[in-house]
Amino acid sequence: MLASTLLGNSQRLDGGAMFGNAPRALWSRWLPPDELSRIPLACRALLVEAPGRRVLFETGIGVFFEPSLRERYGVVEERHVLLESLGALGLSDGDIDCVVLSHLHFDHAGGLLAPFAAGRPPELLFPRAEIVVSARAFERAKRPHPRDRASYIPELPNLLESSGRLRVVDGAAGARVALGAGFDFVDSEGHTPGLLLGIAAGLRERVLFCSDLIPGTPWLHAPITMGYDRYAEKLVDEKSELLARAVTDGTRLVFTHDPNVAASRVLRDERGRFTPSDATPNLTRLDLDVAAPA
Image (cartoon, rainbow, N blue to C red; front, side, top):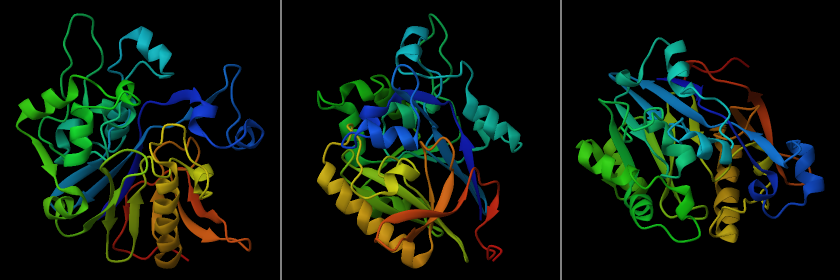
């Protein structure tokens, strides 16, 4: 079982929104903002090549926005970077057997769509892939709350349903059945209803795709949450429990939005704070069945 982190299109978003309860004097040291107070963010996916199939966790933001919205939401590149990242591994979207979406916010699911073209309706990429999403996350995308309505792609639920390739599962338990041996899942509710965190578990290594529960290494500090989180206190509790387990079992965490660190293990420092360890800017076909070098 091989694990690779794949960059998608990058973004620049308001640092205050991304570090909702942290003062600018603090977060600006972690990720320095530009003149518009925007910080750089990756939109990273995780590819797992298991025997007989390839599973992609999330698809990043892509380039489905028309140009004015692409500028508004700080999408940097005009090309579909995730497709290029797959190409660097000798793959295309047609080689993916399953796409697991943690949720359907556009910066995690937009890469499912072909690049914007004037006069052409949105269309799905990944023509062979089964699309797995939790029932609660899918329902939220179909009927969003006014607070997060702008975070969804209105056309996407219907496109997925009409594709004949959508598999809506009952949270982590249903996802375990859908993906089978070698994969595990964790339910989370603090960021958005039905967030599904995927784990690839080889014989020697485990990697967990953190999605928006822990967007990057600055958010390892348990009290730090985003302004986009629906239930900050619950998120802190969920994050603390997950990180405590990761310290114990050595799981590598994969960060979708960290511009510098793709993955790391977790340690606890002398003050009891969670900190990254063994950080890496990318994983390229890491063999999860072979022990990592000491």
